[in-house]
Length: 60
Image (tube, rainbow, N blue to C red; front, top):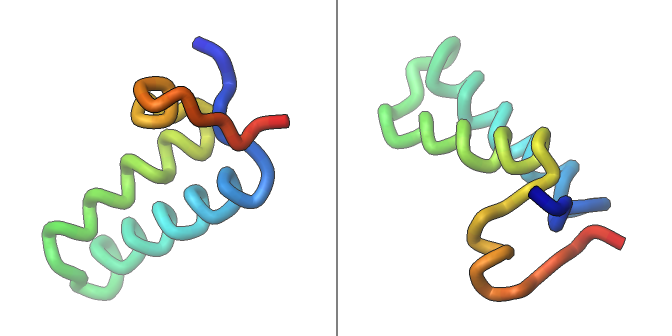
């Protein structure tokens, strides 16, 4: 699994994913906010399957 997420992209994914999950868990956010698991996971793993499909990489 090659790394294709890097830099600011990675940081934004982690922050947005964590904020969505916190919103749902502690602030009574809507159920759709659990989608935050996806950007959080892709940020932590440095791999985005969608990027692989279209041949994109933000990792230097």
